[in-house]
Amino acid sequence: MEFFLDTAEVKVIKKLSETGLVDGITTNPSLIARSGKDFLKTLKEISKIIKGPISAEVTALDTKGMVQEAKKLSQISKNIVIKLPLTEEGLKTCKFLSKKKIKTNVTLCFSAAQALLAAKCGATYISPFVGRLDDIGENGMSLIQDIKSIYMNYSNLKTKILVASVRTTEHVIQSAIIGADVVTLPPATLKELSKHPLTDKGLDAFLKDWKKTKQKIV
Ligand code: G3P
Image (cartoon, rainbow, N blue to C red; front, side, top):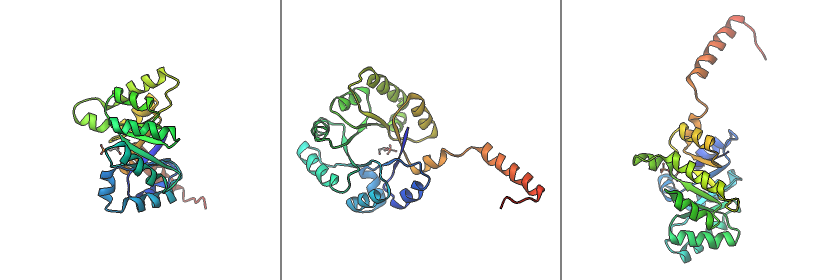
């Protein structure tokens, strides 16, 4: 299972990439706005740090505009993945770009039907938003299970499930149990994954006992 970071903060990406756990990056217009930085420059900087897929979202609403933006974004680096909204125009653009072998990430997916359409249009990734479904009282993880079951029924559907809007470590674990291909994580959630109170407690006890031996390794 791959881990992408869901952020446009270059400093954070640099720091967390040192863990060796970051396989790719996802951005969206809200994350770019939050960073306060220039979109195209930010993508260029990220592409110098991360060699895996970097999702960059179009903002045009029609296919013609989306294709124009996709061309410009693709020129930034060869690992840019074009993020498209799950609308009719987005799906049309997805089909067009996939024929041209340009990688796509179809975003804002909230139903299994939408995920099926994205796969039929040749999307490289589908991004179902689990946290936002939980927010409205639905079950985000059962959508991931449904998409996985549908995709497994048809060997010609090659779209990867990229679990987005991840809020908790439990989302990550459940995604792995279901067999999702990728989770995109807010930096805080990635850090949270390595933590357990018994690890801290155990390490503390080991170090106290080690001190009593008055030994050194180096
Ligand atoms: O990048 C898309 C997605 O991960 C957004 O998450 O937390 O804004 O629902 P969130």
